[in-house]
Image (cartoon, rainbow, N blue to C red):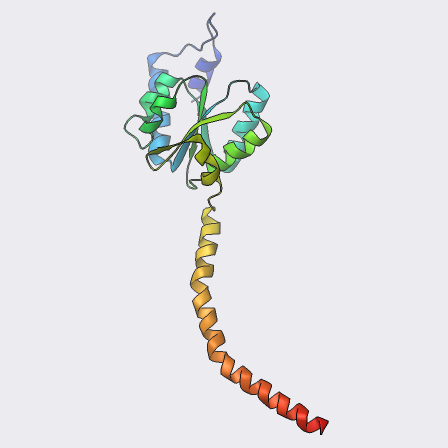
Length: 191
């Protein structure tokens, strides 16, 4: 991995990193492996972001468990080929950063949505979920999805509601009798 980073840092006169065939294959294999296991993917154009802003985005991605990678478009197209994210191939034009969600399908969407609030230069080009290419406008819907823990809590609440209502229904006759007896007692004491 360090060899790839070292190769990416070295640049020729045109400003492009020199990668040999083995390094390109390693990048394609790494991205393909991530894409194969990912829940969702987002392609965003990062033109205009400073190095500091990209570093901030990468740090946020690491915290959220999102795989974030800037890859040459030709290598990215090869990497997503044969995966659920082959649908992204047509939008891989220009300076694109790929964000893949691991366990939580909405984690990359939340990361990109939150980052674009302060950095308008990051422009979402496409969102892919379950092999379906969606418009960039779908980012908000995906980002609003609950996390796994929130979804489980919601499910447990829904499952618990009928039981709670049943217990209240069973207890109501006894509660009603207690209220009637209390009212009769209060009436006798007042008289």
